[in-house]
Image 1 (spheres, rainbow, N blue to C red):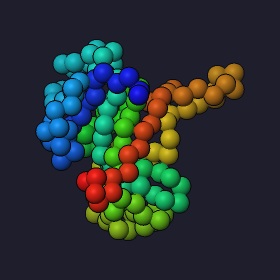
Image 2: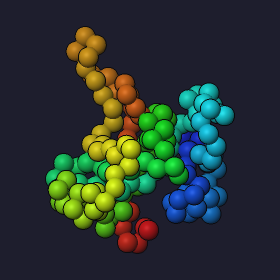
Image 3: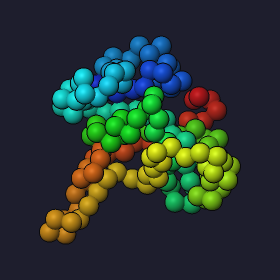
Image 4: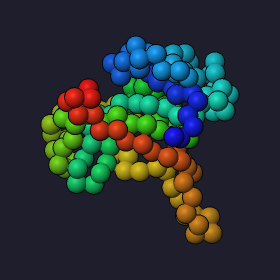
Length: 147
């Protein structure tokens, strides 16, 4: 329905391996340094699909925890970001996420709390989406049956 012809995914993740096995057409693996394909990434990738560390029910916020397999580029550059949230990883509050996931044991260089697509009203007070990231955010909640 969204007209996605190319979908960026992380082949080294469990979700990535599931996508590969499904044989979905248009998959593009994030499998090389960005300098080798920067132009193609910015011009020829319609969407990216990534996992999340969880979500916060109180605010409807996803916790995105970029790493070497799923770098921040995946959720930032394509115009559509599809985020997978496992039902079991939804917690009531930010405090619950910090405690249950043991954030004090080591944070990544870039932990993200995402509550919607990027937007700004800086220019003539006109709301614009996608100013600092994807224009559209699609969240898929994976239940026990879907996982």
